[in-house]
Length: 356
Image (cartoon, rainbow, N blue to C red; front, side, top):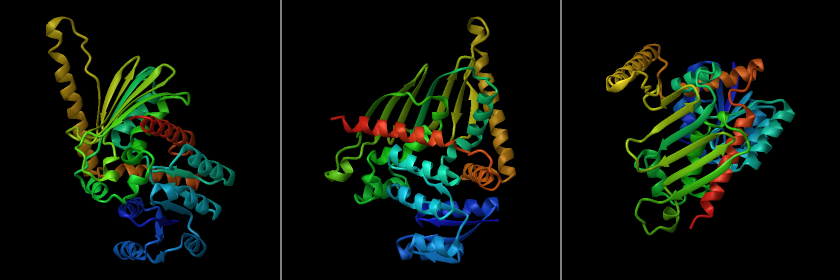
């Protein structure tokens, strides 16, 4: 059983503790935060024995095998390096780092010390993401021509309200503000299909009315971008206003196209008009309906096997990460993909900053 410690006792820390316990491969021995009340609340709520306000002391006393870092991103470099130097493997909440330069510091140190590092790019491990992984590995899509990724953000949700009601919230300090906090989710799904030589175009703007608060009004809520890497392009949309709140990906290949809905947990092939004449146009809707029907029953099966929890994808990711830690298996998320995500975010943020 791995000894696991968590640094950062905010809301997402509950999710980490619950999923670590759900997969049954680690014991959370300690939690740490600079705010003593946050430490006490999480420890009491989850029944965790070790309670610290100093991360260095926690590492010295508890000597965990794995440290989960769930603090705001500006602290990730220092804390990850501290844990790595203490002999721990590290699992980091997104955004992995504020810049690609910071990300490289963490990844290079882990490589030198022979330790594993991963990041919570959980949506790649949703059922449609895992199915896409298999389809691409078989070459069923042919060469990837284009990816279209959509991510909705509800500013009236719990987290959105927290950000919009508090000008001091850490999201407002991120270089890319709101988008910086979610771009990892958007880009992590596409970076495996592009290279490092990337042309970037970006447009960001605020659609909601001005509030009169300078900090809040500096936060854009709509983002569009285009990436080109060789013969593959990516279009991205992050919207706080589009409804329903979308979380989807379309992957266009030279042989076939698939459409993933991460909210409904479906993956279907794009409609293919293969029969001649207007009569042939009757069939695709029924073919699509049958594909969604199969997805629905697959999801029912997952539900019955208790594999349909909201954070089921995080359980899959953590299982693969702990496999890498215990058996020296391959990284669930290759370091070069983490670095590529951070490089693209750097480019997108730079593009946002030059806009009027």
